Image (cartoon, rainbow, N blue to C red; front, side):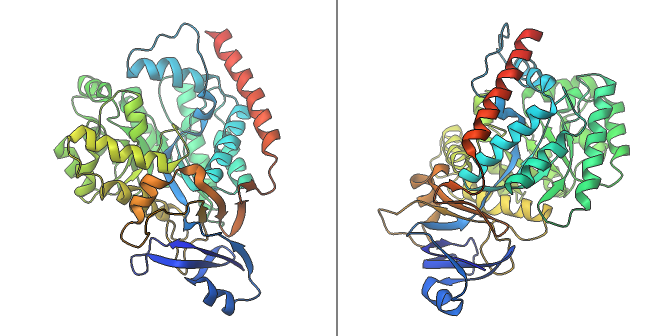
Length: 445
């Protein structure tokens, strides 16, 4: 057993939210007890003790919409690719990147991402992958990396017509193969979904084929009304908006994630609520792509399970939390909003979403929950108690405050030292792999 103590314990359990000088007792993959450090230490003298050194002990953070392959876009320059709007961002950057990615690129980008997750206290991610340079086996390559570094991962492949019928069918097959593989996993660390791109890259025939092939009835993970072009093209081509088109195919439901929902109407929000669809809000990506501010506050207050993702922008969930807070205040010109909604997304709904995908409760420190625990190197300069936890996280922390990360009861980082990982060697390999990818992109344009 592991006893992590001597810290300010934030449990995210409403019945016992904060314990000063608290501790978490972990027995294998689950939490056995939480309480005062001295009491648990006395009761469990043989447990391996990890000293939080006065830091903040918290549940591991969760990212409900990521793009692992985007890791190799950092610093990349693509020749002859002027980018003036969202469609050109997709075509010139992301579709160019994923069109050239081979399995070694996918694996290396996953290695880099999972290390970054551990160092930022992110213990579980829901990823949406594309690597049309080599589709077959790509989700399995990411799974290999996830298991190597011990991060929980829900994976899917982004199905699209944009590369022709053969590539489309290969993407569908990758989803189907991985979903079936993940269903047989007993570790509680891997989950599969059926990934789809925005609807302006999917014909009616393709939508029908996806639904027909998803015989395991896995949840869908799809971009919905991310940019206004998604809405206008859907109206022109199909005579209806994206949410209603998805409804026609039975794609929306309680196991599915609608990414972004930037340009959804009030009627569509009500429909998402009626169908119990989950939503992933990605504030930094929305701002960076200049696609507008989604009605996330209204979506949240409708009672829809809307969580926070990063869309590949970062693996620091606290950064995303900060941006969500100020984005909606700025957009609505109302300083009173997002105080409840932003932490409700990150700490409440992200845990609710991820707990649906994996075998144990996540995002909470209580007996029976998954042993995913982090320590933040943060000593408050003002009083810290149950009523002001979120404010301390918002204004006092960032991901790199994470000192120790434990996932599924295994110590992955202790006092900023990665366990069993030669980070320097991994990063050197990633740089070499990324350079090769960049060279192929610019030679092929």
